[in-house]
Amino acid sequence: EAGVTQFPSHSVIEKGQTVTLRCDPISGHDNLYWYRRVMGKEIKFLLHFVKESKQDESGMPNNRFLAERTGGTYSTLKVQPAELEDSGVYFCASSQARGMVSTDTQYFGPGTRLTVL
Amino acid sequence: QKEVEQDPGPLSVPEGAIVSLNCTYSNSAFQYFMWYRQYSRKGPELLMYTYSSGNKEDGRFTAQVDKSSKYISLFIRDSQPSDSATYLCAMSALSGKLIFGQGTELSVKP
Image 1: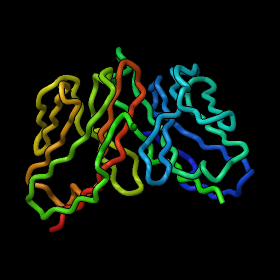
Image 2: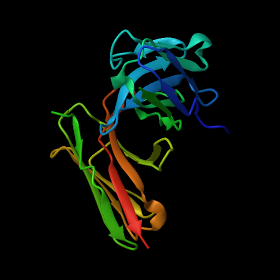
Image 3: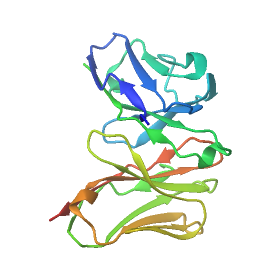
Image 4: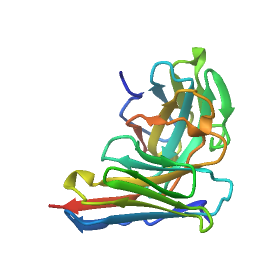
């Protein structure tokens, strides 16, 4: 079974440009999460989808970030316009809804390393 | 103050040593405690998971939770070079949102 995949693996853009990150969760996983790790800091939660609905977007830093999950399959995270502080590694994770979401194992993708110059 | 504190290391030990990794937390609402392992250029991988105070053992790994002290530990016995990675503690309350520690970089030297 394929794991969580993310594209691209690395993106280098200039300040003010737009970047779109993509996450393909494990097939059948209703829960999809985005996290981000800024250099030197801990991995931080951005948002949580249940199927196509945003369950919790409390971690989204500001309105330059837009996440979508049309059809409840893959998800995209768009940053527009990108700022220097957006640099970091963006992780996607998915979990199968078996009951309490807090106990479902989250499987992480390899991450997208975003560099904003 | 961070919700979860973890010494980032780095920690270097000889092969065969016992490794102790720790996290403290401040939020009493946390009920689920996890340890993830992350190899370079990879995503975090769940290693151990527990939801109650006490010990949980899986092979060479033991996870320990002390809710009264808000302190969790991961012990690795007979450490191997293949255990070299970053170890992240993570916690959650009732939602799926994980709160991570900063991660401890471990190096096991042959």
